[in-house]
Length: 88
Length: 211
Length: 126
Image 1 (tube, rainbow over the protein chains, first blue to last red):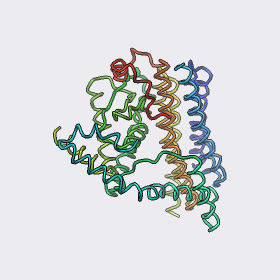
Image 2 (cartoon, rainbow over the protein chains, first blue to last red):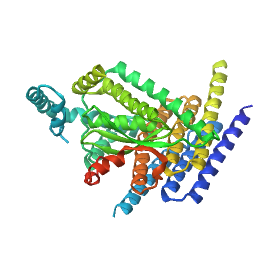
Image 3 (cartoon, rainbow over the protein chains, first blue to last red):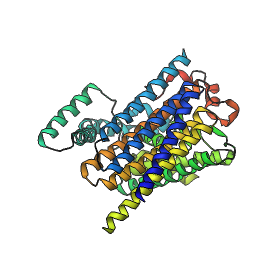
Image 4 (tube, chains in turn cyan, orange, purple):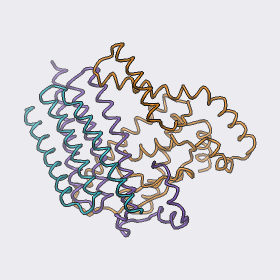
């Protein structure tokens, strides 16, 4: 029974990741792409967490931390770049 | 960003300008000396705990190196000190956190169902909310709390006049706009009751009495 | 034994809720009309979804050091997500990404019209 739960969670995270990927490819503006890639990273963090629960270890925690800070820095840098370009 | 900058605005609100001005000025000069170290301490302790957590253990060597790294980090990457009032009401902090968790949970599922619901997407608005606080810290907390509650994002901040501009989702009527504005003020009042200064608290009570 | 199975069930429920919120965020990302609406759809349900997954981890690995790290991770996300959302929203508003007629009221535009020097102050973003 427990395996079915993890399968369902995996499928849902996969769908979420694919939808984010679609928006990254299609997204009309760079901001749409940034929002979508931010969400893709959060989905990956969730997937890492689910995998840790499934296999019962905590080795991926530092990776989650690094991914979280990467997502934050990425969106801030892109947002600053965009607002600077539109200001001047 | 010293508190004196905010004086003209608060003087306009109070009935007795000279008395309140001199009182708050005296308070600032006395607490400023003591406050320097005091206000840095929570940040330093937090950084030391973080260092220990990242290493996975709390040995004496870790705590010592943690303190050294924390001092180095706060010196090199200097941030302007936040004007924390120093008042902390534990009960109202718990009230704020409980309301916050409830808000985030309810609103997250609301937005999730709006996304899955096949009916057309509701219209949005950009609204301005005049806050009553004079503290940057309360304003920041309010902005963060409202940003985490789905349905509102801070678009622009007017720090000098303490106005937050929100982009709000699903505000199709003028009544919904007013409800969102009231919501921001309620959250502000909760934060001020938890950690705000006495001046802010008095201002909140004043506006709630007249309403 | 009973406690363990209750915790296992709770873990499964939290993971499923996290997955559901992720999917809903993805669908919102697909359907919503402009960048800021998509921002509403993704960032916040994602935070709660992440919180659910972290809760599930905490229920399985009941160790103090792990839980501290999870709390730190959650607080880090809660502080950084509004900042990046604000910066993207601000850049989007200035870049004219919102379609103007999609808004019911726009009080920021009124404020900018009332004070032409408004943009020069750059409040609170540096």
